Image 1 (tube, helix red, strand yellow):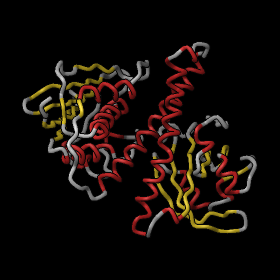
Image 2 (cartoon, rainbow, N blue to C red; image 1 turned 45 degrees about the horizontal axis):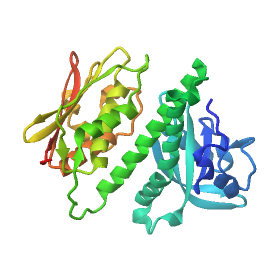
Image 3 (tube, rainbow, N blue to C red; image 1 turned 45 degrees about the vertical axis):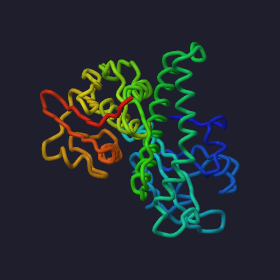
Length: 339
């Protein structure tokens, strides 16, 4: 079971945050949570002491990320709170836990904005700590600092990195979702180079590991400049490459390609051993929709919706080809600009 200590970035967050096992047992609270509940430690605490059992059960069934508006027992009072809940690993309930952040209802300007503002505030406050945890794990795995780790410790560091990356991707997707939902003015002119973004995404999301399918890339020899913000291209590449890694078994293969098809730049992400039914190839781009072949692999249903929304805003096109024998290939076409 994962353990927390005061060195983690969440400890000093202004948000009240706790971590609980799926049976409701709380095993860690940060400083803000200890102050909120007037507690010194997490000894013998359960979620049921603060939230009614039925709501607690719903919270513990969260897969990936969800929000709740609940009555919370705090000292001798019952207060309305918004909760942001993140599950560490839906695919492995034996080792999974949930992290819960508490927000006051006053964080929203009015009821119609509560959900959006909650997600925006949470994304802002959680992104940096998650990024720090991801970075610490990378240091342990890739530098002299982790030279003395034994195999079991390396596996733990790898798992921490994977969980932090997965949670960080969720937060980034929710930030992008909020951005998509807000009224947009005239977009400023900006230039981003597709190959550089794709390379950075591959380096952060894929690591050589016997449990992960091999990834091969074939990027255009020339630079491919797009009239887009770097974050937009990063969300496209990260969601597609991340999905390919997630849905490809270790014996499969993943291929990432970029090339010029004048006047457009093309990004293709292919993975074997996956199949999307023809009737689902349009539905998967809808908000919160997932293909039936996803099975027990966890996911929020945000990624492909965000990909299509960004591509449409850039006057591009996204298509998918899939067959049981050949696997699945997503193809993104974006207009290029002069260097």
